[in-house]
Image 1 (spheres, chains in turn cyan, blue):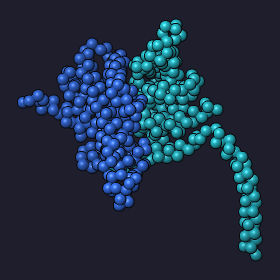
Image 2 (cartoon, each protein chain N blue to C red):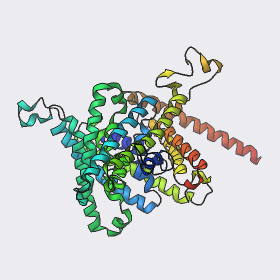
Image 3 (tube, rainbow over the protein chains, first blue to last red):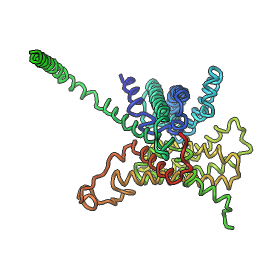
Image 4 (cartoon, helix red, strand yellow):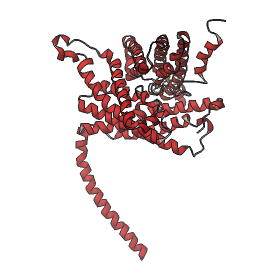
Amino acid sequence: MEHIELFFKSIFIDNMVFATFLGMCSYLAVSKKVSTAVGLGAAVIFVLAVTVPLNWLLDQYILKEGALVWLGPEYAEYDLSFLSFIMFIATIATMVQLVEIIVEKFSPSLYNSLGIFLPLIAVNCAILGGSLFMQSREIPSLGLAFTYGIGSGIGWFLAILAIAAIREKIRYSSVPPALRGLGITFIITGLMAIGFMSFGGMLTGGDDEKKEEKKPAVEAKVEKEEVKETANKVVAKNTNTNQE
Amino acid sequence: MGLLSKKDAVLITDPLLDNNPITIQVLGICSALAITAELKASIVMAVSVMFVLGLGNVVISLMRNIIPSKIRIIVQLVVVATLVIIVDLVLKAFAYELSKTLSVFVGLIITNCIIMGRFEAFALGNGPWRSFLDGIGNAVGYGLILVAVGFFRELLGSGTLLGFKVLGDPIEKTGLYAIGYENNGFMLLSPMALIVVGIIIWVQRTKNKSLIEEN
């Protein structure tokens, strides 16, 4: 259950692009065509799904205060968390290099169309941001870290796909000259972010509240059915009178 | 001729308007948007970026002839990460509250594209002094937009600037609030940052027609 909750939360409520503005640079630069946007989005999902759990392990067993205790009790006092930036970015840079090699081998066309943007995934804030948020939100287990990575990757993918589709269409509309290109993209993203804010109500409230709400919901259903029946009768009557 | 020759002065003035990192080069947007709900946070962010970009540009420029081009990204990341750790520790020591508000966004200076972008585009091909000027110029251009966005969002969103109540007290109904003015709480939410930047771009390109893009 908590996996599903975290999954949808990271896609919709804490969407990387719309809620925290991570990965905006490549989001703006690569969103001119849907096909390249899909390629980059897929690469981001993959890299996030690998690096977040990896960095979770690093954080848990090397960086956290007292994390080195598995080496022996005398290491319990070490706190290496000031090194986390450099460790995380090193993991990410290595992983990105790996993805680049794999993509070049298996899909040269994708490799050509992504061009210089693949190395830029290393400096995509969405990737490092995923790991840093994982650390600051204290995600408790490796499985959840994986879910979080995949979820936020999919959220980013959805965002770039949506904006690329809109930008392909907007080419045919008459935008004020000064807003063309970058300006209108910003404003559209702002409007989409307002739209995504409506997902905020989706998972709020603890389990206790949900249990309390269930009973009235059943009663409400019964009432609704009654209302429906009476409504049907009224409709039937009306049609009768019309026929008469 | 003073400290700066004409050619060098361009390096500082150009990124302020006509080649602004945020509105024209489209670099470093992530952090520009997320932390601008308050003016104070935007200023601190701008200063941190100035420190990292200025020093980082010098370091990379000094090492530009000995870095093998294949691993340059990793070298650059290590340099930035080191500088950012310094900033982070300084903030934690002297401005703890503020470093809590900025949370992960200090760390995200590492992946701020403006920094890698300037390393790649400038520091790898120029001497240390010119790289330093370029770094400072771009950081100031970046800071300008940040401060502008932070100014409007804090003023319209909570009626304060740097925490001072410039528009009067909303609870005791003094100042502007006496005649029925209300704060626009929406300005504090994240989507408005995007729209404010969009409007800044709009204004800038209306003033300078040569910047207008083809669709």
